[in-house]
Image 1 (tube, rainbow, N blue to C red):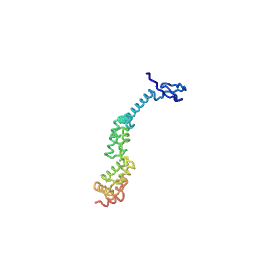
Image 2 (cartoon, one colour):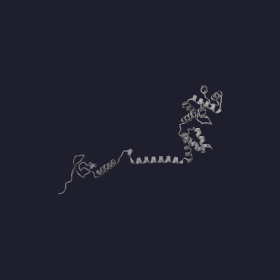
Image 3 (tube, rainbow, N blue to C red):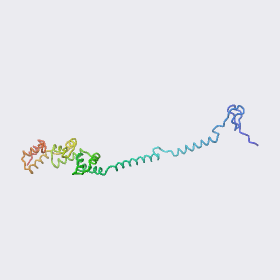
Image 4 (cartoon, helix red, strand yellow):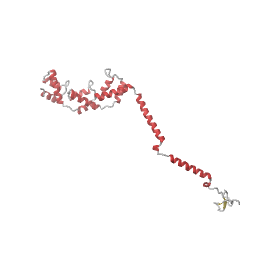
Length: 240
């Protein structure tokens, strides 16, 4: 017995419509097979589902994305390489000058101007002006602190007066600190100026056999020790 074709209903006139018919025999209306009943529709759906599942399985946090990490690493390596190249491009003479400058600042507490002069001096380090300037430009130092150390040394070792130390700190033939750096040192140095004046007076008396009056004049002289009148008088009053 032959298999009877499946009967559908026309969506326009509701009359029976053969399963495979695309046109209704009764009203002539087109009755295309619904797209979801076509085999290729479900194939496309299946491919889309598989693709979405695959994409979801490999998706990761952008912050942990390997390609981004590799780019970041590459950028870091390039930056490091660039910095290394810049360092390598600096002449050895410049690097040596900087090391010398650091030594003069850290150990001898010299001023910026004094260090530069020492670096270029024919009686000193004999670096080129360019190398010396590179050293000064790249030297990290606390010039106020250096001036203070020098002031304390002059006060304790040479028993100098406050004015005498200031002049020595800024002198072109002395330490060559700036007036601001020298003033900082004077304002912060701890010293007994009267005791310094007495020590100087005793030195003049013992080594040069000077009279108290001559010693006083020397202590207060603008061309001598530059102690105050009060400090000089204290020294004279306490000479043995």
